[in-house]
Length: 331
Image (cartoon, rainbow, N blue to C red; front, side, top):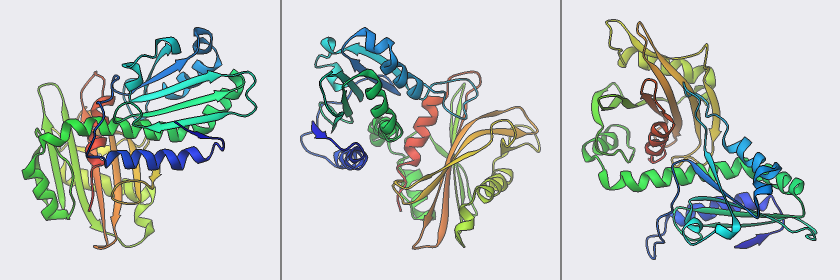
């Protein structure tokens, strides 16, 4: 692992390392292990796990994910002590190693993408005491989560890529000039007026992707109010509910849409919208995530909106699957 004395350097190195690791086609390492959305924290002893170090990691990664009807954590934090860090655990996909060295003058961060497996990101934080360790962790946790999120998408993509639905892929390429890794199981329910509705229907659940394109006129088209208004108009017109006259809409009262800018989206600068959808005239609802990106060459705005319907069941991992498909979008 490469030692970084200056804490802020970790972010650029981490993102570059993860991006490069995805391009490797030769000498592939073993597939990483670990449950879906799981982080493994390695400490020197149980006292560190039960103390402020373990608490800081749990408090951050085990926050409830926004937009899900039932409480579900962003990640689950698992734990072992360093004497149990064998070859299997070294292959964990999302790995944090904590070490306290009392005579250490300054904190040290060691990082490695695809250290013992792929996709993997390992970070070791060394500090003189637990309080200093937590301070370093807090300075890096947001970008660390972004990297772990990327690892989760890479894991799902390993499963999706061999199951490519060529009919859907060719349709999206022809209509929008985009490529997107859509696996088998999805079918085209609607495809007109630059709006395409892809559905995956199972006995107890429904997943969908709605792709729509509009002219790009100004940055105002990426404003929160505009994105909500356009999404509602599209779902009202093209996404009917099960009852006559019913249609999908965004929840704007109880679970309001939240937004964030995603500068590293594969197709370029994007805006993410996340929250819950419901049905006007019916009782259906669930979580969604949407990404809007500009195609500067065509002067068009592309939105891909993914939603889950799975009443009274866990939905986080299904939403992650949709995110993975959307993050494969490229012009």
